[in-house]
Image 1: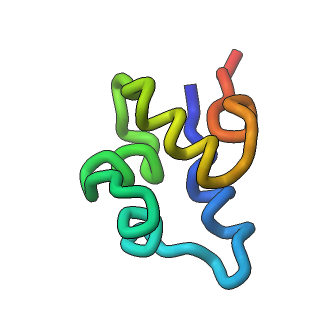
Image 2: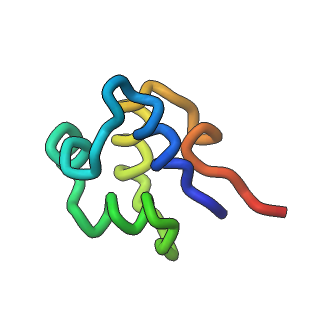
Length: 67
């Protein structure tokens, strides 16, 4: 599974930094960094809900499964 958080952040005008995302959502630096760098092993449901609500997107816009 791959997280497309960097893509969503880059699409913002101006592009969103990890720090700005953390401040806006209340997510921790390790959480944002792991998702942005695709170095996560699991994701908390509340984290996913926070991100899809913040970006006003679907889960499929945030994650994709590599086949």
